[in-house]
Image (tube, rainbow, N blue to C red; front, side):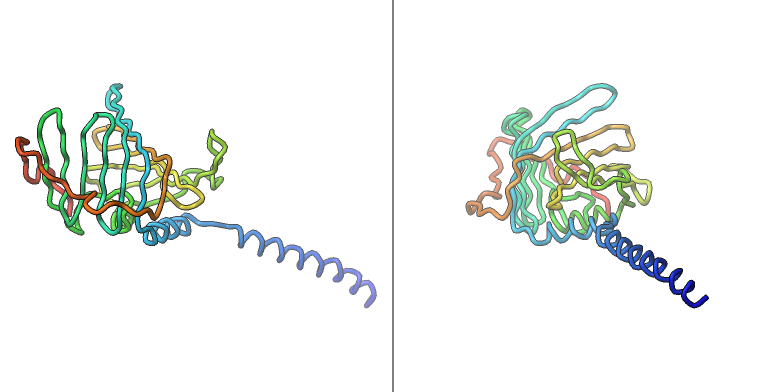
Length: 231
């Protein structure tokens, strides 16, 4: 009987060891959405600067609008969007101010910003902290990272507003395996859909002094604080 018991427990012991080793391997490979969010925040916290080409597609009631250009960002709160389409349009932020220049209308919108503003500065750590604090987030699918049409793999996150308010109700993010946001899709309460994608991303570059300085054209009409920002 003792020999039989030993024969029974021997394979059982082996099975338990194998199960535990497989479970540990599973735990080592298991990644939660909170893990990815932490890595995104850490990545942008460590970034000193970046630049990328961008494309924006906005759609409402079947009508599409396309824009493209280049974005440059310098930590902690400077950024420049140079539009190639529409040509000459700019958005510049620096020292708690933002300027939107629309040359076709000869108008400059000058907006005061602060740390509580609803505006999420592209790629800034403070902007991302606010984004993830205002939205619930989860993976967009069970398989992560997701294989994309171009063969690359991206983490996909679905964000939903914690409280009903203006702005985007839902946002979907595509995040590279280097934890950089490469695409975002948002839907507003008025059913407008906006998609922005980034390509040719370069990080930790040295920009020329004065790049983020904006001189208002002498004949441009200036509109002060046209946007009501959320607290």
